[in-house]
Length: 219
Image (tube, rainbow, N blue to C red):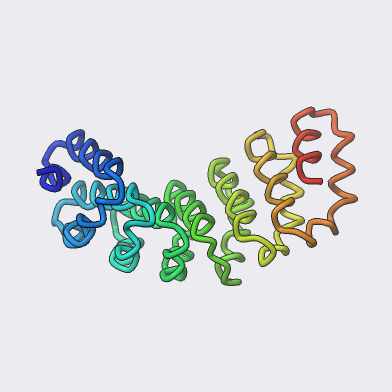
């Protein structure tokens, strides 16, 4: 009965059903094959709710990675975003479709770019092409995208060492959440950040308390 509600005509009911499935626990694995089939539903709203349900299962939905990846370039912005969020929640198993997720880092929609950045970070994607695209988002016009990219770079780790100079610049971003994300990521990428110590120390003398806090976090 719960599975049927994921395909309900009322959006609120679909969302409630997908949330309920995610809260059930390990037993949700039995729903995965049926949900994978439902990804091909002719109603985009149902497809979105299905992707959300799979994402809320986390690692229990690992078998859905490839089926989900077929929709990362769908014409619906909502479906692209829902699929990327699901792949991120599923975690490292999503690296199987890293190329598909990485292409979404160049999406025309900022919400999709943000979801893609969070997904590649949570999946710990580390191909050089992915990292280069991720680095481009550190200069995105949208603050939430810059923040997601900064956090993702840190999760990728040392392979993203070339992002250190760009992260140092973000320590002076106008949004504190981005400053702090950049500071944390500098600490996560390791030795490469050490080359930026002089620049980071210089920011400790900033008139902006938030910039000083972010710089201290990076050291």
